[in-house]
Length: 208
Length: 208
DNA sequence: AGATAAATACCCTGCAACGGGTATTTTTTT
DNA sequence: AAAAAAATACCCGTTGCAGGGTATTTATCT
Image (cartoon, rainbow over all chains, first blue to last red; front, side, top):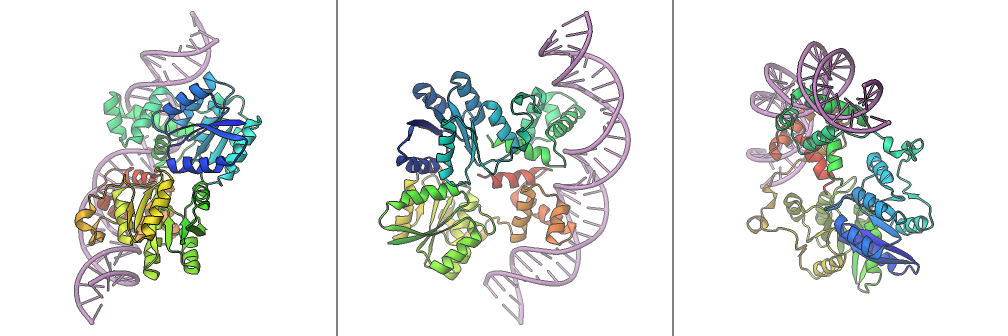
């Protein structure tokens, strides 16, 4: 019997998965949560073998939740179940310790396949996911382009719609400094073009 | 027997609804589509009594699809099933002729309730929907700030990260035209500032 | 203590996006 | 057929963001 906990803020989808697994003899859902905090509670109490989690969630996002789970219970396998197939998110989930990654626009049957594959010790990544970028760096994960503290703060402000000069004022630094951070981030993240950094900031924001 | 057609681009959710309705004796799903175009085909061929449709969909969105369906088949009832609870969208769906509006973060059981209510001739709106704005204007709906067809198309392309000149090229129009549409949208939507239109486009897209 | 990374701040260039007009043609609605 | 709305295209000017440098101070990590 495989025990599973689900975290997902779209109740309709949770219900759907429940219905699907109701007739699966060897899979049992032992807990459901609508946010990351509730998920952690369930995990601590019931220690499922598999956690199926959304990335974009209230309170604690899926990436942070995964890190915490893997830290406390390295044996629990985590599968991401999300709408986003951005490389960044996939790689962050892998870095956090996820064993699988499912997209919501794939058939529900895939959920069963993924749960069984991961329970068996394999990894399971949706076929739509481009894993090319991991080929060289799966083991060395945390070497990836990581933003510095100031950069992340500025990125957050960009995501809130602040302009460069507003950010400079609120941080008591020069406009040129903020601009420099912007450029460095663009370079680090491999972006190009006018709106791309804002786009990136927004994708991260909802995002999780 | 109530006949239903579903349009929804998240296959997982379609599968979930299918599972749910499998054991409902008096509801039968006679067609499924992943985009608006396919939905219209199904509707024309099979003429279901109820159409359950997402709003954000490829090719033809739920609002446009609803208008077309209600124009050709006024007796077919349309229920919106979406993640968005924006006033704007709700009122557009009502204007388009929808009889119900469900949010994806409500229990799946609600789908059955809505289908049955609407099939019976009632309307069904998710309790999370704020309908206060309709009190004065249900009949006169179409007075709201609504983007035109070209504007929406351009907004979609903006959301995809296309620049003005790329959009102009792909639409075989002048750059100045696209710029004009941008400005008009900014005015209509009450926005201001460089990235705001992109931000708006992205917020609508993921909408969520 | 020495090396490395981060944060700070400035230079210059170019262009895409905004903000404000006006005007013509096409489509849609009445 | 007339009126209204949408789509087309152009004008002007301003500014913020990006792309390319360089350089100094402050943390941080061996």
